[in-house]
Image 1: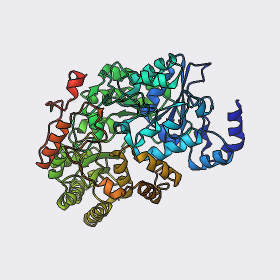
Image 2: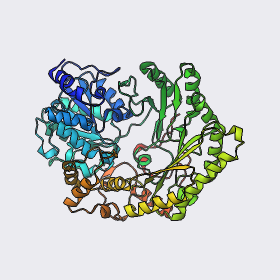
Image 3: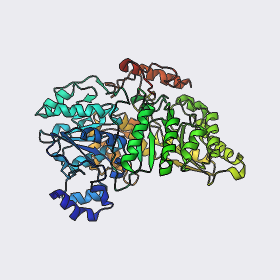
Image 4: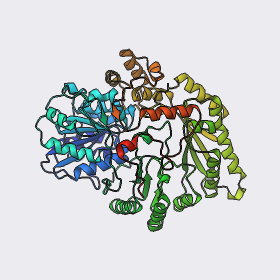
Length: 594
């Protein structure tokens, strides 16, 4: 037992909640290697239970550790009780594999999944005694890097990082490790790394990058697949196997950033998926496997895969789960296959209540689709339905909001139209609304976000109309407003992020930690009125902070989609008709592998 680990176990862990978050040595975790040439601390800016649910971290952990001379270790944000104990004992942020100081690694890498995790990144750098700003770090400090979906506009947090990755990291990260082995100085490495597709070096005077393309993995059948995911001691939020079936989405919803930045659509073949599922089940012992993607039931062989898993693993009581499902694709047969082992609640995301609004956002979903699916679901034995909608969408009217309550009532009517003895019990309908946040690389990126006052009015209006049998939940617009500020923000916001951290802001996506006043003070300290900034309207001619980052989605395509939204005109899914979004110019052609 090394000195850090011994001190941790004897003096700190007895005083904190869930010490199993911090002890490492889980089943399938990698044992420390002797004298690796490169040491990479993979940092997840949230607590252990959240980070250990993240598929991307698990994949990259294995990708890096399969390199003989690279050691990747995990680091999670300590919960506040642990952070306080660490400060009390002057104890540094540490890795779970070797219990080494994070500041001793060659690389410290963060995945940024959500804009509101930025102050938690600063918490981790602070506990690691690593300067926040790239310009303040020396050759003795680690190279601090990041990736993840939020890097499609990295400008608000670019000052914190030496290197930022855009796109898919399975091939970029090992390539960067190889480059690092051949350079003795940080600057030399960064200059060479800037030549790699998908790499942005934001803070080196010698490098001026005006156009940075995202990295793309051409085929999902050839990409590295997760083989031995770590099985945690403390149950994570999603305590199950995650099998990625495809990347990208056919649908082209106009509000959806992920649907744009993860293009092109790439499916894994059925034999590949079966082989990977068998291996994951064998290597973990989990009792549930989740088929993950942006739209799993769009996979051309979803039914065959589900049938295989149910038929081959029902005797072992292994459950198959699917994420939020499209209501026009969910067949009764698939419902029965998934539900044959366990009748859970089902979750759907119609996103809008009225047909007009669903056309505006290009949901390509009719009320007939919705109600027909709901009836089949009830008949299949499901009694608990969760529906997700957004309010504050572009071109929305009060009549569109009323449509959410009307749709809920029609679902109730369908349930009670069934013969009494055939109604599944207990019946529960939950409707949740989130506040729309305009995001880069979407057709609605120019749209001004609703004010918090307007969000509140719409929430209360819908609440007054909602049938009494419905459980209605809605999101706090304060958090959504700040998310909009950061999502479409500019380089100068890094000063406000640091100030927010100094004001005590951390774990901002957690309701019990969210410090709204701290953020307001921080933004106003740099001359920003937060509500005005979030609600500013951008024009097609404006130069946007993210214009130099190329995700191969043409701005002309996004403009065209926004204009079609104004006319309530839909665009067909891209596997039915190509809409010339721009991805094929870089990729050659979209391939729907089966």
